[in-house]
Length: 407
Ligand code: C5P
Image (cartoon, rainbow, N blue to C red; front, top):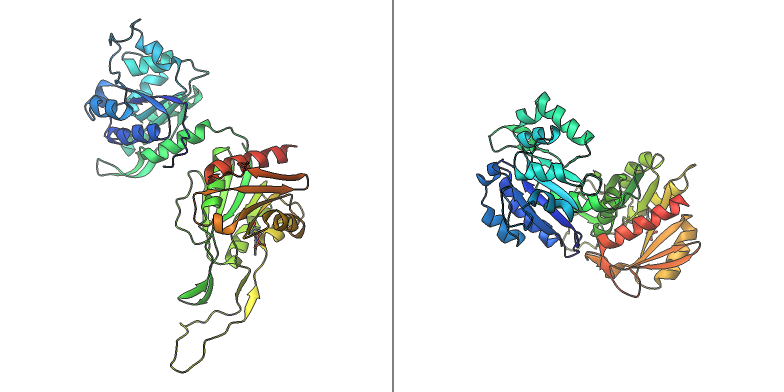
């Protein structure tokens, strides 16, 4: 979680139905609140068997609704009032029984009543199914899920894995952090819907021998943020990552590589069918001409070893040189004169957009400042000499790219 407050100003009705995954709803409430949302919890009677309303009241800082006969609302119409100022209803966990009720328009308790009474065009319904794998796979559930989607509902998950019943399979509710990310993504404008985006990220590692190599300080955070922002914007994203230990953004296909040559070989076959290529990786310019098969030993009295270096393939230039290249975005990590070097790189690599940043002021950090350089001119992100969180910058960059490929 960051302090970006990605859900600031959003009001979420969080509905809990009966299932052991209710324990995750406490963490989910906390994640949503930390992301800036206001959360109104509504629980079915079955959910109350799994977790106490007091816990959710404390975490959401609001009284929890559990009954349609709750007299706290002046007009006694909690089922109407609950969704009128809500940006979304999220049912997590969504039991098989509750999904079945929804698709039949049943409304015999407060949560299903509120779902039926919600303004269907302005208050989307998101469902995070949680149930035993046999229940999930049952044709009745699959039929109901398909109908819930046809009625405008959005399914978040389920995941596959170990289940509380001891079985293994599909039906696990997504984790709280994953659901929070899904909700954040749901609200992002779909600027790249239907587009294919290819991103490189991180450093490369060029082996000297089996235990040593040449690498650099790139953390991969900017490239991973761009992959996430592009996926949030509705693109199909493939991320080719050098050696980094970062979590793969949800919905992104990741290919791990180590060396520049491996990165080149992973990227090139995908590039021709991509609409956009963002080369964020800090690719090593050279590699040892031949890596030693055995560890190079330090022997008493012998001098330090010396290496022949060979130039690595320039991945960005290779993609930009394709007969029908995708829209190519290069990065320039400089220690000085960012604008001048970025403009030089624009020509050198023959790409429509270069993003300049200061190497020492970005490697490993969660925030950054970008300078967009193209044939038209320059633009700072976020501007005014300020810095911003890398995901916030990535979303702005995605918007800039979307604007350019449209015009
Ligand atoms: O290393 P250089 O400053 O030339 O990097 C500029 C851009 O080129 C970056 O976007 C980087 O990802 C890309 N690049 C590449 N293959 C290389 C070197 C750089 O794709 N071998």
